[in-house]
Image (tube, rainbow, N blue to C red):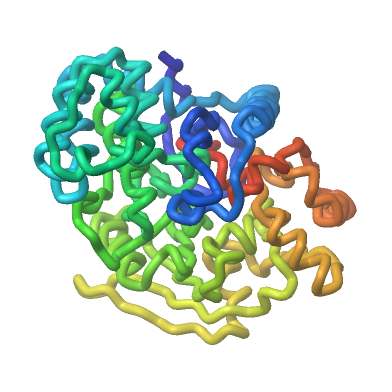
Amino acid sequence: MAGAVAGGRGIWDETSPLRQVIVHRPGPELERLTPETRERFLFDEVLWRDRAATQHDLFTSLLRSRGVEVLELTALLIDLLEQPPARHELLRAALEPAILGDIAVQDLSGVLTEMPSQALVDVLVAGITVAELRELGVAPRSISLQRAGSDDLVLDPLPNHLFTRDPSAWIGDVAAISPMRHRARRRESLHLETIYRRHPLFTGSGAPARILAPDLGQATTATVEGGDVMMLSPRTVAVGLSERSSAVGIERLAAGLLEHGRAEKVIAVALPHRRSMMHLDTVTTVIAPETMLRYGPLGRLETFEITRAGGRLVTRARAADEMDTVLAEGLGVPSLRVITPPLDAYAAAREQWDDGCNVLALAPGTVVAYERAAATNDHLRSEGVEVLEFDGDELGRGRGGPRCLTCPVARG
């Protein structure tokens, strides 16, 4: 089991020294990606598992070399499943009769309940096929499984678990569980919620002050994903109003934070709804207390401030030309410094698609970036930013950069 981080847990801004993160090393779930399944699982391409794992190891080694404690998601889940109550809770929530069917749930529950923890984590993350279920000694009784082919999936894999930023976000000392936009990712949030509620590292003195969690078993339009969430300052959080995070979701998150005094202001940033800009951190990230890296062609965007007064939520629309003023106020600085690489439209679009703006701040003015975003990295260095590069071309084919690969749980 990983050790506890000293000095408490929480995320109060985007750039204080990073101390502890949750990551997921890509594994057998990537082998479920094929030309036929990739769109279903929200991928543009089929990733090479071994190369992705090797690159992820380089990434985590870099983090550790800078003093960051790295918590591996599968290790946390294995710890969790050693506790019978947690195992029962997780399986009951993961095996949904409304999706799998009552008889299939009975079959799966019977065999998975008794499975060793490591093997069970492999199933929960990589999924299981009809043939693999039969190899465990189960003769499927449900109508749907009797009619399915041997290679058909009974429980879907979670290849997007690689991007641990999205299923949850720490906002101060609050763990906000993400109601994900696509069903293909919703079990990821279930795993993080159970870890925060049950794992010894996140109970007692290591527990979040509050867990904001939706009913993950219900379809909802109130979606928010962690890649859209940015802690600008201890009392202000920005959230991208994107193709993945809805206005209803942002309002519900704001209500949960403001009602209990965990924030004073939530800023919704109205993003274009494009695949290339699926989250706020695909176009901009905070790299120093007064500085943001930004995709040049993004332009200015309309923002909406949500505060609380007289027991009610209050909104204020701000015009696009006020965007930098709004963000500076959120960061608590007199003015915002925006770094935009001087690239032509074609080069800028390529680097943005290659996660050039999706950098992970390890400390003020120190970031981790993919080496393939060469022009952006060179420009950052010319502006005095320390850029730590690693080869992440295979990881990036999943449409996520270094920030996407981490769920920070302690800074400062």
